[in-house]
Image (cartoon, rainbow, N blue to C red; front, side, top):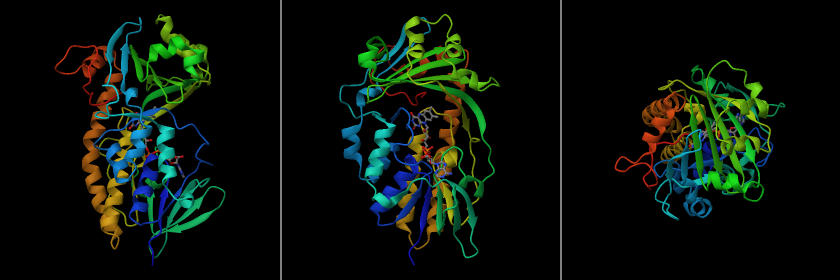
Amino acid sequence: MRMRLAIAGGGLGGLTLARILHRHGIDAVVYEREASRSARSQGGMLDLHPESGQLALAEAGLDDRFRSEARPEGEEHRILDPAGRTLVHHTPRPGSFAGRPEIDRTVLRDLLLDSLPPDAVAWRHRLVAATPRPGGGFGLTFDGGHRADCDILVGADGARSVVRALLTDAGLSHVSSHVELTIDDADRRHPDLAELVGPGNLWCVGVNQILAAQRLGDGSIRVGISLPADDRDLDAYRDTRALLDLFDGWDARLTALVDAADSPPTPRRVEAMPVGARWAHRPGTTLLGDAAHLMPPVGEGANQAMLDAAELARELAANPADPDAAIRAYEEAMFERIEPIAEMCARVQAMMLSPTAADDLVRFFTPRSATPSSGDEEPVAAPR
Ligand SMILES: Cc1cc2nc3c(=O)[nH]c(=O)nc-3n(C[C@H](O)[C@H](O)[C@H](O)COP(=O)(O)OP(=O)(O)OC[C@H]3O[C@@H](n4cnc5c(N)ncnc54)[C@H](O)[C@@H]3O)c2cc1C
């Protein structure tokens, strides 16, 4: 009998897994809670790392498509102080794919969706419960009452994973707060802001707060504000005036990034699982990506989710007769790989929102062999 493999969650991790399995002739159904691929904005840009995100795309047979859609110029980054002075200006080599080229999330997700058969994703299927069946596998219940059975269930259902509860009771801690805004059609409507941000990322680091902006391929600018995890009422920041009060005394060109936003500010808690979280193997199920190892957002989460997918697919393809042995091998290697990365993410996150963040960040982004300004060496991680 054919193995029925269900993937809960059609984000970057779940779709990468479905695509690589499909290339190996293994069918999987992706159950995704959203109504369609365009139901929700997928957010900003990602830089894909050669040893993780790019490697997974190569295994998915999508490296050429990635190169034609990526924006290597998006690697340019600028760090300013609140007075508007430039502390770091990094310019990548023109057209170079040697580093970590950026790609818009929506473009990357579309690239994966386009590579799958149309019926591979069951949209509007929010998993609400997975119940073990007596003979093995799981009965799945979706919002609205749909049901399905599977032999193997992979939880790729992100930060608030439902599948995670089958394997671990590791909780989430609040690591920072994030407020997001968007400025549409920046070149035409706000050329001064388009010029300030440039083709990539801009960060301005104050005391215990960061104002960041990034240029997307569709000509919009995505603005993000990072604040420490404290007990402030985030709903207060749905109001642009309250947000602007946070930047009292900052250069007017920087606060204009908040003032010019077309979307209402969207605040949210940023959470993480404990560093080193593991679980004892349970037959018939596993986790990948944020469901397995939610980390502070400093440029690793999507890359590691895609690498998890590639490694799990490789194990399942190599051992189709014994999927539990394949899952066990994947989990052992994944736990070893993720722990030091999660430690690094926690360290960088703590540094980013500390009182000395500006100095630390400049040091962090300054190539070891050079003085600050421009260069084409890669930093080890980037605050996002
Ligand atoms: C502000 C911010 C910036 C970031 N920047 C970067 C970056 O630059 N580089 C980087 O590598 N990472 C970055 N990350 C982290 C990255 O977004 C995540 O690690 C990555 O998206 C994880 O992929 P995933 O597939 O595991 O989960 P997700 O991308 O969250 O996908 C999960 C999918 O599951 C679906 N889903 C959820 N629950 C259910 C359910 N019950 N039933 C069915 N479907 C469900 C969701 O709709 C979603 O489509 C950032 C994160 C944040 C918050």
